[in-house]
Image (cartoon, rainbow, N blue to C red; front, side):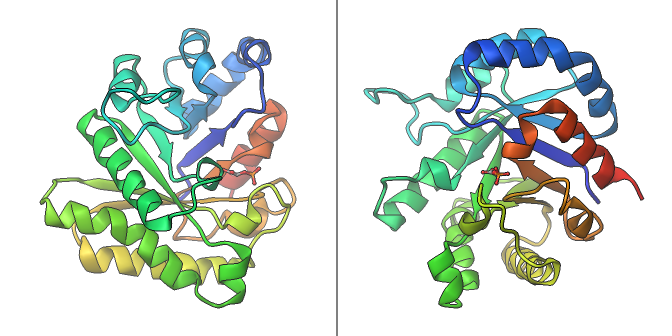
Amino acid sequence: MIKIFVANWKMQKSYSQTIKWCIKNNKELAELSHRKNIIICPSFESIAKVQTLLNKNINIGAQDCSAFEKGAYTGQVSAISLREIGINYCLIGHSETKINITNTDNLNNSISEKYFLLIKNNIKPIICIGETQEEREKNITYDILKHQIDMIINKIKKEEIKINELIIAYEPIWAIGTGKVPKPEELNNTLIGIKKYINSILSDIELTILYGGSINLDNIEEFKNMGILNGFLLGNSSLDFQLFKKIVLLSISA
Ligand code: PGA
């Protein structure tokens, strides 16, 4: 069942544009958020202001956090600070935060560090996973996704960390911002694979699965009734409130 909508604003809105958006749309957004869990992820500098402008029912998320607890890490933002300002969700592993990092194992490790720092600070991580176009063409999507998942769930197992919930956002990299989406059947099979794999390692967990990548008004109908999906992560389609609202309402209508 569709219950979550994450708006990932990336660096698309400036500080003043963000303020205008919040003032203009707060009331309607608050109404929407009574029906579904809406999580708005503005850029870091706008978070505190957005918190003051939006209704308290609307969750505010961060787009990333540091893999380090504290220290000499210029330009980074710690999970501790996010907790202190009242953030309750944080994206990790988004492909756009991986740009220029070439060692994949270091990268996946750093995502698992972020995961544990967020859990420790009572922030729900939204773990983004996805394959590139090249990996898809080589037919290794499933192996890539498994590897990305392993870095986190093996550690949960090994360190016997008690978690009740895992939120996975499947975002094929080739679909982000490109207008391309997987065929519903292909997506369904991939999500079933992800779910089976996670459940084979962590059986008693509430798994929330989101899809992200070029969701728009033209394709939402194809995905909204997919039983395995619990929500959507929207980039471009979350910037214009009326468009975002239409997508939310369409995906929760019968
Ligand atoms: P998009 O972005 O909806 O613009 O493809 C999704 C994302 O990057 O999370």
